[in-house]
Image (cartoon, rainbow, N blue to C red; front, side, top):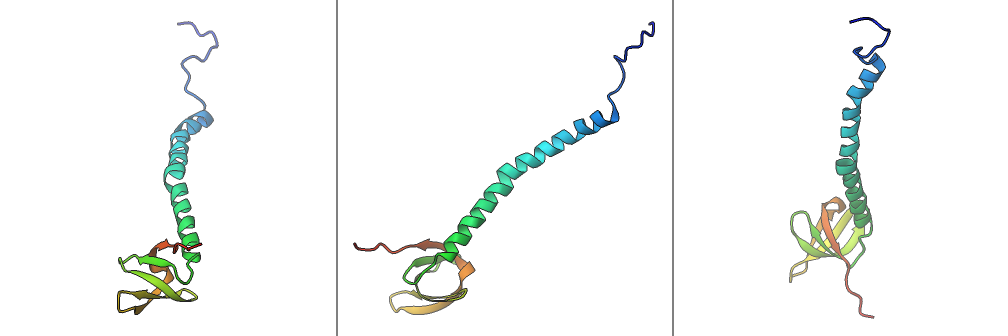
Length: 106
């Protein structure tokens, strides 16, 4: 075959080869960000907003499954009233799983 100066069978330059190798890795990180990291940050933000909005009189459920009514709040310590005997339990704010706002009778 005569050598006519064309580089048809030549390997790609090292810069192009590096880009070709890094593209799948970058694509994987982008996919992970949109499907794992971003939704988790959104859930964390919603949880923090929910915990900071707890007020006296709210009905809560703890991560241990205890349901009660908030009767006192001091910083991150909540006192909740549970059961028919109205037993008071002291819990940490981070232990709250769900907050149900009481329905106001207008």
